[in-house]
Length: 359
Image 1 (cartoon, one colour):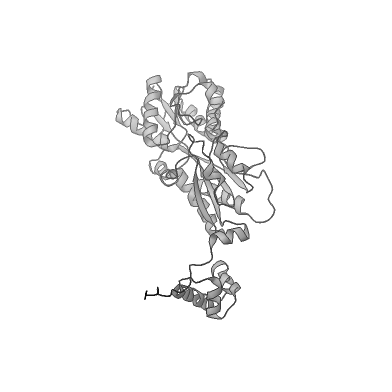
Image 2 (cartoon, rainbow, N blue to C red):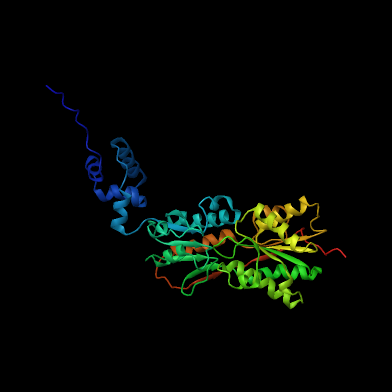
């Protein structure tokens, strides 16, 4: 006679947990989803019973189907996910955004959107209640896929799209503080390092036509602000070497500085459109035994902690507050008004990396 398999207890469910405790299923549900509706003692009793019975909690998929809410927002990055944890500016922005997510009790899903990829499946299938778009080019298919979803979206920095919510700064006006500072010190031979202007990797010197047609609006506006200030002071913009780098790293800033110096060895000031690039430029100048600022002045943009510690002359922008404002716009309750704009203030910071040019 064959042995019968041992009888197993059926998996615990919300209903069986409620029956075991002699309470309603709504009360059990509230213990997980609305704990403020229960006394601490009752919730502890429910959670302890769930642990003993092996009940894992409400099915998140079933809950999302029922409520039509995913309980999370998506952060659309024009990089690999690791960028959010190693780039100082992205880390600060993420800090601000997660603070608002914590207050709203929602999760955050990082959605990568590399500029060299056309695959938008991760965006179109992401289980989120809305998107924060972090600094993307205007021709990115991932951006189009996010905006096509029937969920709200807030853009941070770029691109500026009519009718879309935006959090940012006036990049052109902010960087003019850098230009005015250098011009006031007497600099006339100046080089520029900028971040990528398009989705294709085109490291090297940048033509004026490419500057004007840049799909990354932040870099385009920063270059425009420099051009307006220098041109007004009599510095011909077509004589200013501008070098682009696709990757945003200290090493990329160093190599770009070397390329600018090869184009014009006589420059007395180097403007980087990010602090990361500026720190790389200082490394390259130090390697060449050129003193900063005695031989070459260097400026940055962003106000990240390593730049402040290095006493870099830069523009400080409230990156953490950017993240908070983006989260507030996306998570704000009540009726939404399309095309809201939150423009934050910046501060020019004169550090110790700029001085009068050598006579």
